[in-house]
Length: 132
Image (cartoon, rainbow, N blue to C red; front, side, top):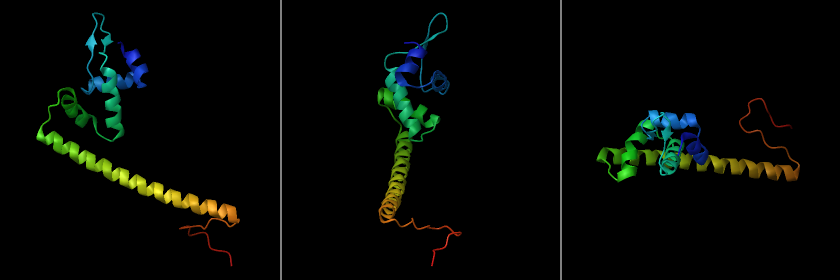
């Protein structure tokens, strides 16, 4: 498939696909006229690249991971780096869950105050003092 079709099927820009190729994350055959041609498995590869980027992995780590994805071979060092990345992601998930829980508390408090007619308490605002 050509680059435009791959971009459409993966919802990734043509520019990003060219960047992936520059970084060694994605390969393409070239037609005699120089056009990129991608195999059918390029769609899954691009989607994996997107997931790994979204998880915060840098392109260098993703490039090192790709041979492992393709043929199942990995060095002990790569496995160690991936385990460290997984721990980092786990910490992010924990932090995001704690933030969500705090937001739930604020929403619950604000909803309760909305129904009782009381204003939300100003927490941490140095310029607001309670009315007496």
